[in-house]
Amino acid sequence: MVSGRRGEKRQEQQAFALKGTMPAITMLSLRTADVSAIERQLADHISQMPHFFLHLPVLLDLEALGDELLDLGAVAAVLRRHNLVPIAVRNPTDAQRERAVAAGLGVLRTPLSRAPRQPAPPEASAPERAATTPAPGPVRRARDAAPAPDPVGEPPPAGLTVRQPVRSGQVIYVPHGDLVALAPVSSGAELIANDNIHVYAPLRGRAMAGAHNNAEASIFCMSLEAEFVSIAGRYLMADEIPDEHRGKPARISVQNGELVITRL
Image 1: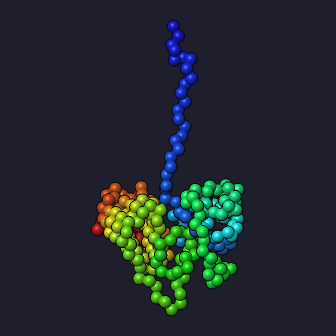
Image 2 (image 1 turned 90 degrees about the horizontal axis):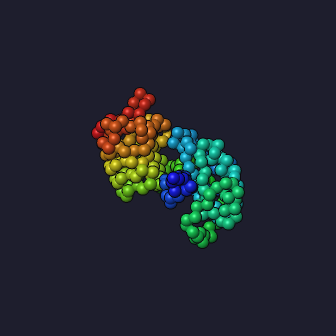
Image 3 (image 1 turned 180 degrees about the vertical axis):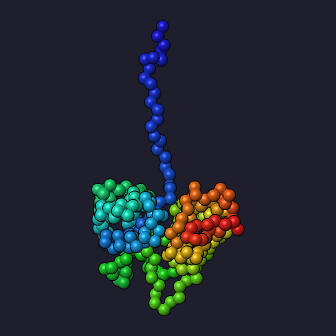
């Protein structure tokens, strides 16, 4: 007697599942179509913390360019040369969208429509628009640009205190002074400072103190749950943090050229 199952087609195992997610992705907000300027400033910025940017996925935000055409294929090649991974563009015009697709980049579908732009004042249309944040001092910004130089004669700012939770995808950068966070730092969030970083709450994201090779800097936190910590180029990944310090108050500092974690 032949079993009725023998003639049935064997059900194939499901090969994949599509899921909508919003992972932490670095956004490079382009402010010039000059590919040479982008590469020059990008190389300078990456040289400060090359291990941090290795194989980092990057989203290109084109909103600040307006209708200016950009060779997105060349920009993507620049990113790959520096071991970054360009994945998509955001806020493109129709012409920029076509160039993005031709360069093998995705197009982020949100926001669905692009808000109308206000005409720029005359002084904002100078031919040499740099890809840096124009205002000096501690600012919240993406990792897309090197720190702006301080105006001559002005003292550097004293640091920054953040009172709200730092959520996944946010980057807080302080070029001078200490960065103090009074609320939790989520996984996927990043804190960067040239001096000390203090987190009076759980640190679950990434923290980079002594960004300009300041080995005297330290990282302090009330609960060490970080994905990545770095001081002056020395770093520890999450799996390199000893279990005895995980979830505990800790100080991270440089001693004899290596990162050392001590309990507070």
